[in-house]
Image (tube, rainbow over all chains, first blue to last red; front, side, top):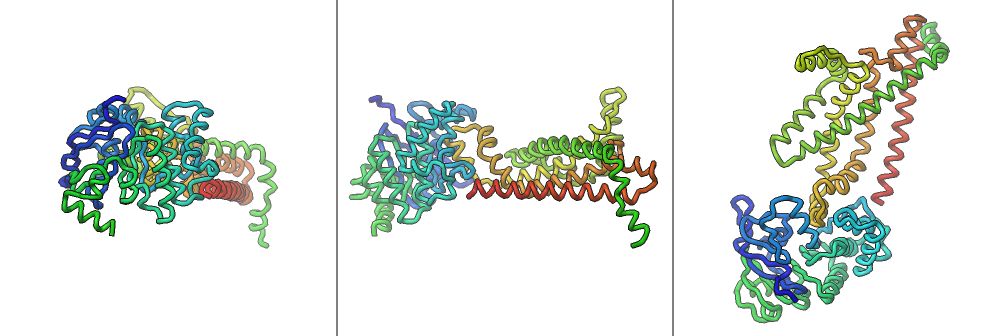
Length: 248
Length: 233
């Protein structure tokens, strides 16, 4: 296996006007690894994720996707080419309501990757099978529960056959009973060796599934390590306080 | 019933000239179709300027909307037919004249592009930004995001408002007789001069326009509503 990490983040800064949200963040995500990012709201987790696929432009620092520099890309066409390799799942699902479930999943492989209709259709059905929604292919998103919508969003991202998946609080807007079905799909992906960065407030999931956990505070990685280290014996006081609230 | 009222309601003369008048009505439809195409195209262009991230570009869009949305149809038709060719002719250094049909299409197309631009803009801005980001995150170009994610939803959302604007545009085609486009009203005026019976002729024209607009708008509204409900079920 190549030693080049799937994602490398080097000293990334991001400011919105005078507000510094990221103040120099560095970490690697090896291929096939699951990295969870935890931390309080406003700590910079989502911004970091959005910088990785250039939905936000970092103010400084370097980001490499499979060894290719993302940070130095200027043209939108080049950025779009790299984005194809990063599947993104959003907190609010962001499905396209005018397309059926199958339409949502087939759209990017057809239009962006240029696959034939039949090939893209087969790929989309395979992705829907992975998220256990094959029977909902012809429904419109409005007819689905939140958990089902989020699983469609995961299938949509998978259909681009990305090198890594980015999950931005994928279960935060779901009722507790719907959270489990989404987490189960994410567990399956992790088990299949999918490279993943997961921004989450689901501490149990982060502990069970992650290879590495990053605790962000105030735009910096305050603590990083294997889940048993971060959850079992956190070194930083802030991390300890944060976890104590969640694990109470 | 007074003699005048009986005369107004006796539409036999209108019926007698039906062939000539029907050809005039066809011109209303031609002007409507061409002006609607121009208004939608220019309106979409202006709306895209209005939502651009660069302020000077947004200003250009606003200028377009404010100028044409606030220009009365009547004034624009006359201005485009008589003044615009003079100005353009002066600019290129030779005499220029627009055929009446072209003037009518340009004038109404411009005026209604101002209205359609605002409808498009409101529709575009109503699309949640997350849906657009989801498209970008899949590697879709801005053009693909516009054509595959934004516009199909905008069209559905703007339909009720757009139907009202199409009705207004069709009604506005009745003023093109001013610059001698041979539409229904123009022909009614011609027949009136010959027959000297304005009451039944103008009543016939009024009833014809009412029937067409009422039927077409009702059908389109019903079809549009069914389509919207099917999609967002």
